[in-house]
Every structure is written in structure tokens, then in C-alpha cells.
Length: 384
Image 1 (cartoon, rainbow, N blue to C red):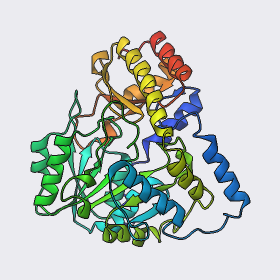
Image 2: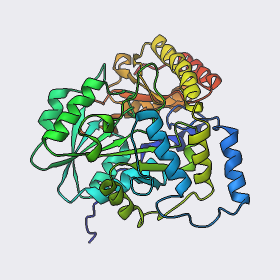
Image 3: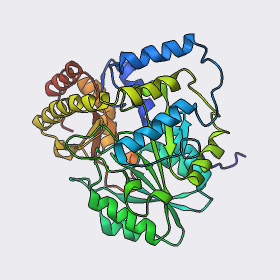
Image 4: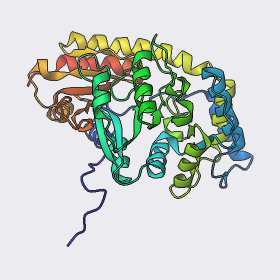
């Protein structure tokens, strides 16, 4: 008889499933969030040089000093946060490993973790694998904003952590200062730690990203995660980092050493170079993404979809209820055959029914790809 495990009930990631569906059907993939143009050539050249110069063996477990120092300079330059790169920065195999290591290092069985709903699917998996219990707080349509009363109601005597994501995937919401202040107030009042996933920190559109670690009383209780992948269009490099007080970073390192231990030897010096020398590249990318966002959102709106225009990230969310659909999963599985386009249903990112008719589309593709997807959608029968 098979024994139950903590992995029971965790579905396969929807992103791999829908990307495979796009490849199998020849559909335009507006599902998984990876760019179709690579990041800056100068950083790629640095990675090649590192390979030629011998960066082909294990780098130090916490990351090479050059990258940890570059991350510390980045946090000081952009947010005024002073870090000791030796104890307050650790390099991870993408932010996804950072999330995994943080959950395994900081969550005890039975601990409750407050998480914004819809939540990125790895959050659900890692909270469960760590033995934690998720306490979702829903960003409700149509504006997908934080409900401050819901935040307060979500806290119980078993709550230990807030797992935060802003700019938020999958909705594109960028939390406002008043929303962050509420979360900080609750964290301080209940002595909660905060783990904040900020991989889209530089990809906002006219709305500033404010790290919660910069708010009064929050540095000492906040672990911040980010990566090179989104800001520099190197999602396949899987070079990320965690920053914060030494005890929280140490908990990540304690878990990480039994996950990948280390990775990306030739990519770490290239990431350090990008952070130090190509600081303007993410800003130009954000300007370009804003135009692509407007192209996609305008086209989806013209099709009769209710669109929530995002303030950041790669993604826009639509409600397909107006087309007569009651199930986003059914819509997305029918879409490749009906229109030759793939998108992501959001209901799997909710505990509640709030996301049942919501669908996520990515605009990090070239404009001609977005235009082709919109052409196909316009020519298709999209109504249920």
C-alpha cells in the first residue's frame, strides 16, 4: 500500500504543460513567461570569457564574492540598503531555489504562511513540502488590489511568515506604499518574518517598486529574493540571490547546501558584470515592455475581453466570463485548436473560486509575435 507523502496533492506545474501543448500544436506561446530575445551581448561575452578562463568547477556555496558584492552594491544604489556581502547575501539557483530554501529553512511543520492569491505555483509546492499551511489573501478582480482587512483576518496564533510577491506574478500588480505599510504593520505587530520575491523589481511601468525591507522596522525581519533572469532577459541562466539579515540568509544557505549546493560557475561573474556595468539595461527593457503591454492589452480588449492592465511584470490578466466561459482551464485547453494560441488559466493559483474565469497572457514576446497571436485570436471563434 502506497504511503502518503508531502508531495501528494501538488499538481505538475501548469507552465511546462502549456508550453508542451504549444510545441505540440504549433500555437503561439503566450503562456510561459520567457522572452524570445536574449539579454545584453556584453554579459553573454563575459560568460564565454569566464568559461575560457576556467570557471568550470564548483564555485563557493554562498556564491562567488564578485557577485555577492555586486548584489550588495545594487541594493545600496537602488534602495539605500547597506549589506555585508559576506553574511547578508547568498547566491541561489534562480529565485525558485531561493523560495525553496527559504521555506525549508524557515518554516516548521504546522506553521502558517500568509500568501497573496493568486500565488505562483512553486509557493504552494514549497510551503507544502516544508510542512507549512498556506493562508491565502486574495487580490480580487477587477482591480486585483490588496484587501487590508483580509490581511488582518488571515493572521492566527500559528502564523509565522508572510510570503510576498511584488511586482506580482501572475497579476502584474505592484503593491502601493499604503498596501506595503499595512503588511509591515501586521508583520511587526505579530512578529512575523517576511519573504519577498522581487524578481520583477525593475520591470514596472510608471509605478515605482518599493521593497518592503526599506520600511521602518522591516529590515531585520525581511528576506528579499531576486535574480538576473527577468531584469536582464536571461531566464535560462538561473542565477538568483537572497539578501537580508545574516540569520535569515544563513537559514537559506543551510537549506540550499543540500539542494543544488552551488551552480552557474561561468554565469555568476557575468551576472556580476551586468549588475555593475549594465544598470540601464533593465530600464530600457521596461520601456520596451510597456509598449508591448499596451499592444497586447489593447488587442485583447478589442476582442471583448475584460483586461486588467498591469503595472509591472511580463503578464496581463483577462476575465473570459464575458465570452460565456465559466472555466478558464477549459478555455485555455480549447484555445490552441480554436485559435493557435496558448495562455495560462489562473484557477490553479487560487484556493478560492475567485480565479475561475481568469487567464494570464504574457507580453514579453517580440511585437510581431504578439501581433500574430492577436490576428489568430481575432480570426477565431472565442465564445463558449
